[in-house]
Amino acid sequence: MQFPYKILILDDDKLVTASLKSLLMLEGFIDVVLYNNPNEAVEYLKNNPRDVIISDFMMPEMNGLEFLSQAKKLYPNASMILLTGYADKENAIKAINEVGLYKYIEKPWDNDELVINIKNAYERAHLVDELEKTNKELKKYSQHLEELVKEKTANIIEMNEKITAVIDNCADGIITLDIDGKVNDINPACESFWGLSENILKTKSIEELFETQDINWQEILKDTNTKLLREIYIINVVNGNKIPVEISSSYIPSNNEKEAPKHVFVIRNINYQKEMDRLREDFIATLTHDLRTPSLASIQTLEYFLNGKLGQLTDKQHLLLSTMKKSQEDMLGLVNTLLEVYKYESGRLKLVKTQFDFEKLADECIEQVMPLAQSKKQIIEKHFVNLNIAPVYADRNEIRRVIINLLGNAVKYTQEEGKIEVKAEIDGNDLRFSVKDNGEGIFKKDIPKLFKRFSQGTQEKRSISTGLGLYLSKQIIDTHGGKIWLESDKGKGSEFFFLLIDSVITKEKDKVWAV
Image (cartoon, rainbow, N blue to C red; front, side):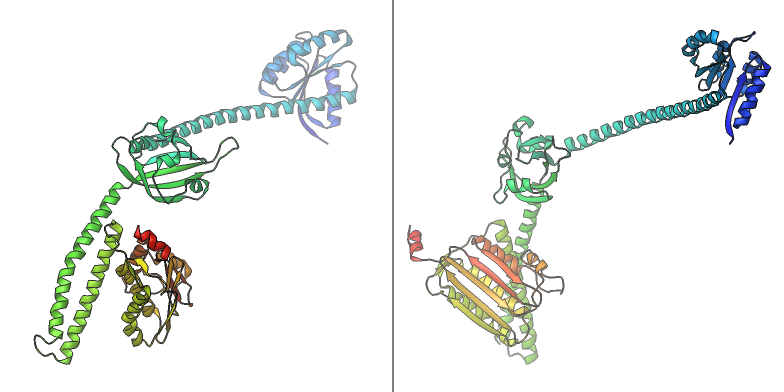
């Protein structure tokens, strides 16, 4: 086996160097250089690195310690071995720490021990080299890591400064709260909203900060989902203004056990949007109101023609004018519906409640839609329970509008020869009414859309309706303090319900009304 060790041997006795080389060659050391003069050996080492350097101690021109000291300066990681006699042993031991020798070997040496020491010296030299390279790499990596940390830290600082600048200059209010509703941080916009300093706002509870009726703040703070909260107001303590706002609530989980989870509220002043909505609604109200007069005039004029007051009409003329009158009546109905929607939304419509016989009202509504139902060969069945036991206290005209709308929809969306069931029941002080058809029904996912403004229910089929009928019906029932809803599924028909709560006049309630 051959060893690629680079070895240099120095001894002034040529017999010693020759015998050492022969020994090492036999053991497989193929790169062995011999020198008998220390100066020549030093010159050689200046341009030829060695792994192991072996030197005699006593030499005439330069002793071994001096030679090995110079070699050490040239190759700090090379392993140095000193050959010494017994008499020089003490000096050799002393010089090990001063020169940094790997080992000294006494003469005469044991060949096997010498070979083992050379192998160990080589391994030690290479370990030192590898360690030095590793240290250099670690130092280089450490420097790079330090620069990288500095760079990242600078980026984080810059980013935090930008975020802080955005938050501080944001027109929206930003508040962080803990799960108990205690304010942790706010931005300057919040101080403007409330007219209070940050220190005072931090002492307020969440219920004190916001004015609302339908929001359970404790439930919001427990919810981990992002939510948009509406119908909320802030009272500015400086000028007393009531500011309408929308709040986007987001949950921030904690990253460690010491830090509690939080909520972030982004608060937007929607006063401008509210004002724009009001102006738009006022414009619609004015427009629809102004459209009623020409529509009524057109209908009355067409009535004169149809009644023959301006001359006898042919059948074609009568059909044409009847069609025109129907179109004008439809347009007037739409105008009236738009005006009613505006009145409910603006809070300008006041209910005119009276006591009335609900069964009689329901029969009148059924009679009104019966011709249309008969034209489609439909059957309308009534199921009334306890309607004659007491009158109902509500706005008769508005409730009539709701019933007509529900019946009209049922007739419209029920196929020919279908069946429509009208149910009404007085239960205690509550009145429950429903209209059920056996039409196509709608998907459950579309039900929440039905009572929204301009909604036409499902996207499966295009409708020519305005989408205001059910929206207005909901406004009417809500204003009465009742509830309206739908139960339906595709292919199973639909049943619309409304409930007038505490609206039936019992003997006990008569006493209340008398007061």
